[in-house]
Amino acid sequence: TSSGGEEDDDEFAFRMSLPEFASLNNEARQSLTSLLCKALQGTAHLTQYHQLMNDSGDGDNDVYEFDDPELWEKCADACDAVLDRVSSYINKYNSGDVENLVDVIGAVSSQARNKASNSYGRMIQGLASMEKPQNIFQGFVTHPPQNTRGEPFVPIIFDVDKQALLDGGEFNREGHGLDSKNYSGDSNTGNDVDITKRKYAPDMVAPNHHYGHPYKEEIESLEYRPWQLDVSGIDSNDDKKIAEKSKYKNPGDNGVWIDNEDDLSQLVQRITQGHADGEIYEIALDLEAHSHRTFAGFVCLIQLSIRRPDESNSEKSPDISSGYDFLIDALTLRHVIPAHLGPILANPNIVKVMHGADSDIPWLQRDFGCYIVNLFDTGRASRMLSFPSAGLAYLLRKYAGVDPDKTHQLSDWRRRPLPEDMRAYAVSDTRYLLDIYDRLLVALFNHSSPDVSIACVLDKSKQVCLIRYDKEPFKPSGYLTIMDGGSRRFKNKSGNKVTPELSSQHEAALKALYDWRDHTARQEDESVLYVCPNAA
Image (cartoon, one colour):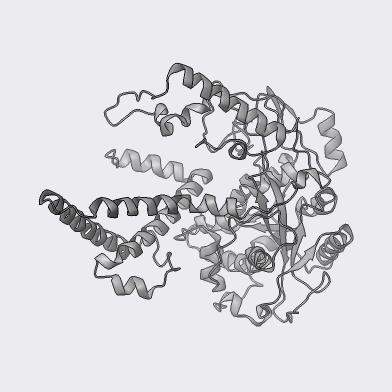
């Protein structure tokens, strides 16, 4: 809590104008809301809301929004009820009635720890027993030098002309470039600007040069097409939930699976021809990735959807010529994806509709040498419209009438064949996105503020496109975050420096182990936590 008054309010407003800060803030709001709702369920038996919370169902943890006064009123009541319970325990202790009290507290503590580790545990338990894709499929360049500390990430661009410029040194830049990778523009001096204001450790080990964004000029000079700013072709009175429309009435359609180059070529040809015929102006995209058995991570699946006409009849088993949702196997097709999808993604006449593309953009660069030109980020639109949540789940509920399944958020997307439930989960991320995009266009077009518009969202989306992938640097002093739970880095409440419990010899051993772990992870293309968890 701060007492800085208007000065702090101004500082917060300024930071909220930065997309990265706003994104983290919105994610924190969503997480806090979910935790509060779960806490209310856990304490419902202590309050007058016991029946209400039971009626809401065990899975409905997002029944309230962060700014809902009723949520905070119930939290206050829950705190009072818990305080009363704690007071009763204290009274029992003071009166000598401590039977089973220690056991009760121990059980509650154990349960809390188990819940806290569930997410990571589910991910580990869900890992497929399989050979690493890096050792099987073509197109992986994850071993050194791409993982090394001292060498920069070298883009491999699908466009031969761009690649020739890169090979000729056209994009060579001095410095590690980490302070500009999150936004390469919007500077009066011509220098790149980092919107995250991230601070890097002085002992950081990083390359002394980097490569600039090869599509920076195309992105910054992009002029929006008139049809992008026009909503006259959208029925602004249509408030029917998207998923209830007849064109989506086919529960057995889990998308068209594409795992060979001929099928991928046919899909690209359909999009290219559809655009030439004036039928396809937008595509919806999303990615699923894996990060545990690899150092930098890699994309496993690309979801791509094209617009589904209102009069279309859903087929139970659509093919490439009749389907609208496609799942592209980014493992088997990794080596050919750049040549086929690269031109479409860089085509300024086709809008790429994505939600929260801050990670997807650098992943496409890292794995395929593909760059997005002309993006509409529905997450940026949500923030500009000041929706209670900027998450895709909120948009799916609001516009599509779909309660998203979060079961596979931590699933192993390397798994092949991909189970049907995972296919259904993946398809849902893009299936409704173009119709949601239409609803957002109308909301932006009709907004009363000149600072909230379609063009403003497209401007924000340009910034996302300018994000540049770079390798994560090594910080030798990072071992300090492991010592004593990270308290070595901070001061205690009294302002005094916290002294670590390790001896100087033990600290030196930990530092050497930390260095070895990072080196081994890069060399073997494994995550650092797979090589050696912090707890070890």
